[in-house]
Image 1: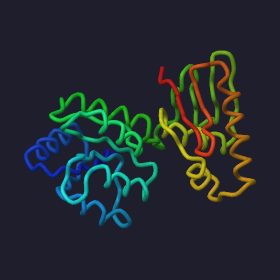
Image 2: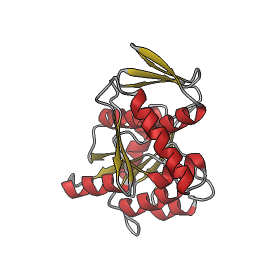
Image 3: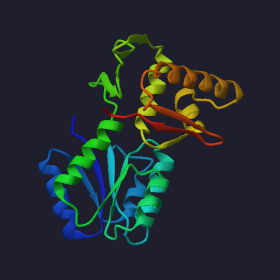
Image 4: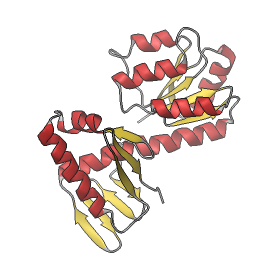
Length: 228
């Protein structure tokens, strides 16, 4: 499967160089000079695995474009390109829900590495059945959470919830998003059910104190799954 990248960059020279380099690395790149063109396909022909957005673009800046994309596609991973490399840019991007950022002019090899790291966390593929989570291995095919000290048999709901949390590693995820995406309903009873499942996962991960599923009152959860 070829990874499809959405590239939003209004600089013609930089955009062309970046597109060519990414394609040489085996990615399929759709390059948009005008961010308004991205908005026009959000509900019709949006079939990408990751977005690379320049922050400084005319009409619609990268931050605004990211908000529009994430409103329609909450799980969509985004990497920001910024020419300024200022703290305010980084914080704003992360608060919006971006997965990473890189300053221009960027080293192509570093960009590829960042893209691959994001995809490793977010691209839950049918061909991938095992995921490393700290000292554990999640085997989605056998519904097992494996630790050197024990093997835990998961329910399908527990497996689905764990995969969903993995998509938001090192980020904050809203309760409502989990309920809407996994339970497909959001009321008192499903909320209580979610709390039970979260408690179970915390218990399952008791052998690795670096794994955190922290509750944020009125918001949701902050996820921290170490990759090694």
